[in-house]
Image (cartoon, helix red, strand yellow):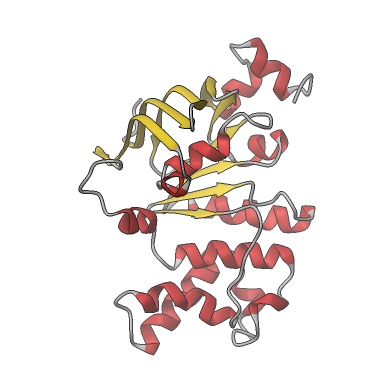
Length: 253
């Protein structure tokens, strides 16, 4: 791989109780690209995303084997701060969940918990995050109104902006457009294409079409195993595995 890998996954196995959910998974993820991890229901894509910032630590009976390296450092090493890891590798979920406060305060909440105290610097972070999430022009005149008044698509972009305000290095998105209309979906996809200049993005898309639109690279999963991966154009045009071809063309899944 010519580009520097931001994340390297080696021999990853993940279990709920004794049930294997991810099996012998190996993948290198370059920096500043969009990787789409896709597959049918129960393929393990959501679990894979959760292992990348240790959200799976919160699941009773979960067990992981193998390594996940972030900039060469195993994120499951004993000396890793999970709080700091989740700032560096932040996740946006499928259902937007704005905090019960203003649009401004939703974005400012994280920076205020950190070391950023001055009003000027917080305001700059809020504006920058909203611009990067392609939301600023729609909300700049009502920053102090409740975030819950935003539309579903706007709320999802607000949640993306809230993550961006923490200045992560990697953004994980689990079906971020699954409940949104095509116009809102297009705006989020537009923001993702801009964001990859600054971040590494890993998305579990809500359908194959979105995978083809937004991803630089793809990884197709089936029953917890990595079937095929590569550049999106190459995998979609000439899949090496019949199961990949069948899924992309809608023969199953």
